[in-house]
Length: 154
Image (cartoon, rainbow, N blue to C red):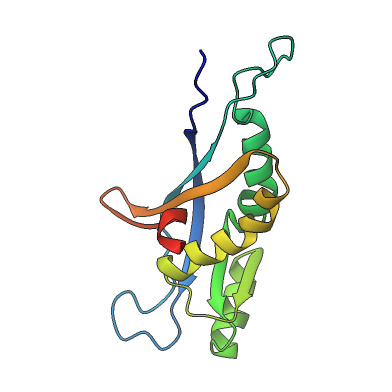
C-alpha cells in the first residue's frame, strides 16, 4: 500500500444512565433510565512500521476501550445525572436509592450529556498521537440518537 489513507474506526459501549430534567413539564416527571449505547469514532492514519506489532492500526481497540472505560463508562454507568439546581428532596430521595449521583451544571438532556462526554474526551485524544476524536453518537433508544461530529466544529 503506497498511499496513506485516513481511516475512521468506531467502538460501541452500553451504559445504564438515569437522568432527571430540572423543572421538566413533559413525561416522565421522575428520573428516566434508558440503557443507552454510546458510539465513539476516531480517525487517523494507520501506523506504518512493518516490524511493530501494531503496524496497520490507527489505534488498538483495546486501548480505545480502556480509555473510554476510564473516562466515561466507570464514572457514568449505573449513575443518575441531575442538574445541580434539582430540588434537594429529589436529590435526597435518589441518594437513598442509587449509589452514584452525578450533579452537573446543565440540563441533563441527551444532547447535553453527549456534549459533556465530548468535552471530557477531547483533551485525552489531543494527547494521543495520530488519533482524533471524530464522532460521538448517544442512542437514547434504538430509534433515537444525538450526534456530535468533529467536522461540524470547524
